[in-house]
Length: 258
Ligand SMILES: NC(=O)c1ccc[n+]([C@@H]2O[C@H](COP(=O)([O-])OP(=O)(O)OC[C@H]3O[C@@H](n4cnc5c(N)ncnc54)[C@H](OP(=O)(O)O)[C@@H]3O)[C@@H](O)[C@H]2O)c1
Image 1 (cartoon, rainbow, N blue to C red):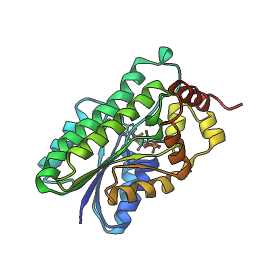
Image 2 (tube, helix red, strand yellow; image 1 turned 135 degrees about the horizontal axis):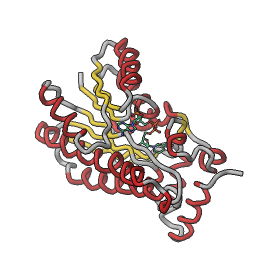
Image 3 (cartoon, protein in one colour; image 1 turned 180 degrees about the vertical axis):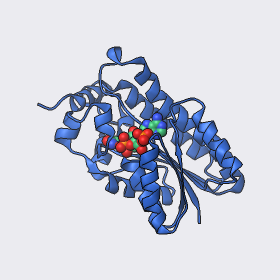
Image 4 (cartoon, rainbow, N blue to C red; image 1 turned 90 degrees about the horizontal axis):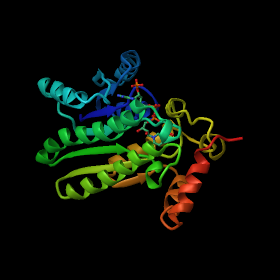
């Protein structure tokens, strides 16, 4: 029975991933800020006969990743699968964005993800077994006016994950970068882009469908996986179109739908 650590497991894609692992009898370590929601998820998933440990932590705080790692070390709990899923975005022009949101997105989407990977990867490499999945986004394939920081953080996640996947390719450890497109979760309400053309006109996938794609990609040890055929096509198209055009379309999609 392996142990899976999932960040951002109190709702959305992380919660759906946790359900899939619970059904397949993996023990779980779940992290998010909301202790009450985590407790509810733990109670629900323990019915599958697994152990579920929860940590109510704000991973955007600099000390949190190391605190989590040390706590698990102290309890002799090994992590076989790490899923860096927690992330958030903020809609609005960069010039008007609150500093706490500019830095907060970087702290959670980039710093915490990188530090957790750096903390948990060595033991996996030493044991020649383990899996990591970093949740990026199709946002990472192009610049994102009106969500400039968020899109840039996800470009980092894609680049970082593909690079380390290459570095560890002969160690028995896999690193999967998973890219959902728009998905029905609490994400858009928190970001403030739930009225955008992306969510209103283009349409979003369900969180359980997206999680299933992620689960399969991780278990198959894929390097890069994009959820949904439409999202895959859009991601491919950005590689051939002129950058300025791609950026202009990206802005149009982020703008409020009439
Ligand atoms: N939904 C989309 O359209 C979409 C598209 C592409 C990629 N993604 C990516 O998918 C991942 C999951 O997003 P989601 O759509 O499932 O969003 P969500 O419904 O907002 O869930 C986010 C999860 O992360 C946790 N979280 C947020 N801030 C945290 C913090 N500072 N420390 C610890 N945990 C924190 C939340 O729990 P608490 O609030 O309890 O902390 C929640 O469990 C993110 O990386 C996101 O960027 C989402």
